[in-house]
Image (cartoon, rainbow, N blue to C red; front, top):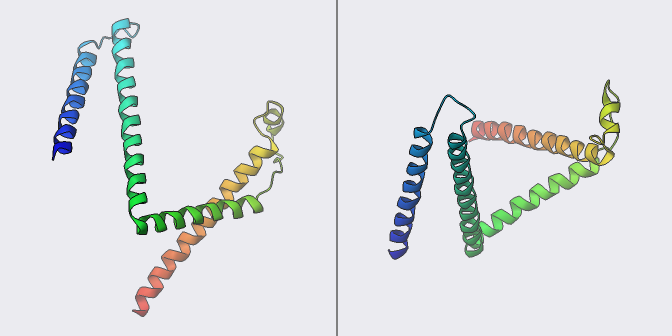
Length: 151
């Protein structure tokens, strides 16, 4: 129960800081876009948003990782899903091609280094992985419909 109280107080503090920052931003809004005060409050609000997003992401990843470690069934399903994803990527990588396409304007991208054989290999890998996953999802949808008919 003590952890719940600490979490509640922490959330109230975060909400208070957020409300203060929003009110400060709204009170400094001006039609003059070059106003330094307004730009400072906008930047402060953006940094606060980035910090909250980072904290929330880190907390969710840490808590999910802790849950996976403590629950054997969750660990088994997570590892099997990761293995499946790695398998799809490996198969896609094997079948992809590093050939640079021939189209109007491609020479410009080749010369400035945007398109390289490595880039084309990974683009092909992504496309083939998308095709494989799309085919698997279509088969799963059809299988689900057909199996419901026979039940």
